[in-house]
Image (cartoon, rainbow, N blue to C red; front, side):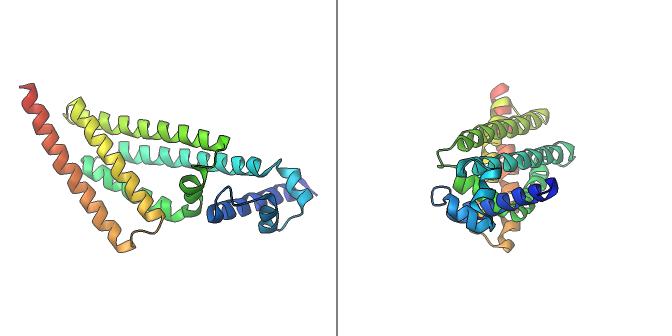
Length: 209
């Protein structure tokens, strides 16, 4: 087997693993399932991976690298837009919608399979989640403070917005929302951000007088 053929075979197993883990979960899958899904021999499987968990870990590592690139894209969009804060969120939401539709299977592995798997991959994923949420919360807070909001108001609005974005992403991921409803959700979140942001700003301004 050439190096190229070996790489293709490894990729074949990785893609089969992604599909079957997304469909059945981590604990319901065994090595025999993976071998059948990838259409390879047991010997070939063990040439490339030491175990089911080893394959799962490799899949999660790849997904985490892809998510890191995606988070960077969101950050660049958020920081580069000249819109007000609500307009900036609209840009982020549309990016999230596109990403969820494009990477639905991979994201299902993240949110439905990795969590609760009891593997080392779950620990790495949870750490990445915490870092990502903290990063975006701080980024939103800094942008709000730059527009004149108090630190307390900015932090509250940042947490509220992160929660809204997370909810929208997951409802799209699991098919709990129809395509036509997405624009309504986006408009609703923009209004919520504007109204709550303005109210928080007024309250914080009154307290500082």
